[in-house]
Length: 412
Image (cartoon, rainbow, N blue to C red; front, side):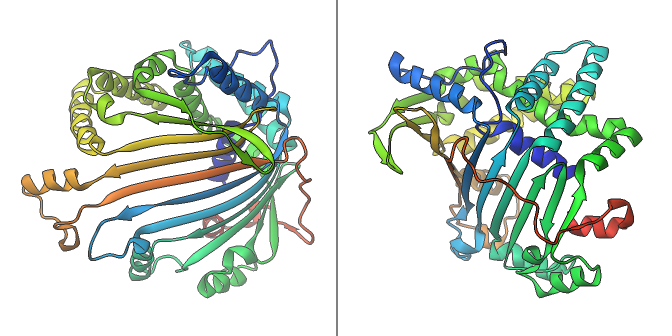
């Protein structure tokens, strides 16, 4: 269940909203503005600040990722699709307090000060889960190539697609087991044998408190993700390294659900970045952060070899790469209504180098020119007016202590 806690913390704390524009809080890092006019840059800043005040909203996510360009495998057989809709309510004060604690912990050098920060974060995190409400519905379609592998392995129930329906309310996490089993008769039978059907609920906050008392380190480790992300977002050195390679432009305005919105495109010139010394410095910063978060000593010789290998790898991928973000922001009231992230990487150069190095490539990859693509569309609406989240009718509350580890793993 710790994985669920980490996932929820990441989602609830770092998507737009989940904050409040308190003037005594440290400001968010400014957005990249590039060569935008002062007025256009201010619109991005105003949107960022306004989204910090949002305490409830609805959200939609559409994600598609996969590889195409392998002649012997149909593109759809290597494509993963995910659709999700969510309603979110948070206490803005707690959200912002957690954000500031994470950012403060990311710059602590003293071990005792860092431990104190952890203790404060754990308590705020538990209060956050007690007061936050979320209704999440998600559908996923797995690539056929992955399904074929799963079927051959036979270790987990096979399913072409599956759905997840989950709610968080008053510190309890609810999961619709019937919805989860819809895509697999085998999984349904397994859940029925364990008498896991309909809506089941867990006292997530009490379980987290219990885990905390038994093993404080586990809870501390679950917060490292947020600390690392907070540091990467706020680090001025990283932003300065990236700034010359980031382009921001305002496209034509358009209508979105009756609202006039300004459209901004932000792109990263990864090919130019990967060819410059700045990229080596960026990699070094990221490695140092990873070492600090893990608490493990860094072997400089191994790090140097890894950085060199990654530098070569990045240059191969960067030749026809694309990293782009589109944002649709209200002109009258600068809410963020839409956001699209796109990534494209040409893998053919990597295959060519492997072949020249004498590596035996699988038959289906010989002569292939694979392209990796990722696209995620986010939509936001009903700011501060989202529907309430309600406890599922007939939900059965199950004490986790009553379940064996195999059943907990099955649910997870």
